[in-house]
Image 1 (cartoon, rainbow, N blue to C red):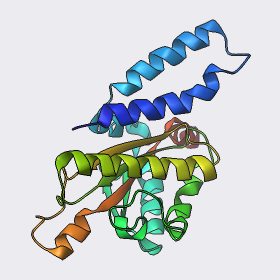
Image 2: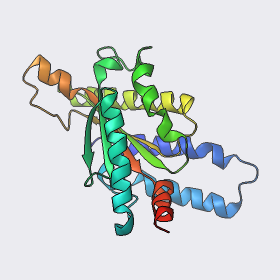
Image 3: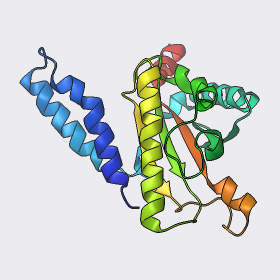
Length: 214
């Protein structure tokens, strides 16, 4: 899909830039940073969603934990699904609740929708958050990918400004590539224009699951 690696590479560079200028950053860490940047820039969204893998002994705890998160988000009014047999939670927000038509600047009211996801950034490594922005098919392919790319950046800027940390935040502009329904009506197009927020259990949560078994 167009621009996915470029947008993710931009985010990797932004997230790691502050580390690069840190005066106590050793050469070995600098080399690790460069290697990490190169690795992350090559990941597809599908590959990103598979990591980290949850060990078999921790799957029960993780699934129960993520089920509670899914129910909590559902009570807040989000459309919620799960994947990886319940390990990953997906909350969907219509783009109309975040952006004006064809606009790439978040509306003031968007904070009401997005602020509920700030807790997922409080503990470093507990969750990985992936943003996927979709459009309908109204417009050229280049326009639609450009639109979703700019909307990903707007969302990233919101979380970077308001979250405790965003080291585990990733974004993918998907344009019209993954419609929920055929773009044959106003209602269908409206449903296809959406932001999906994937909540993935991170290494800190997996370590918590391991500790509970001791």
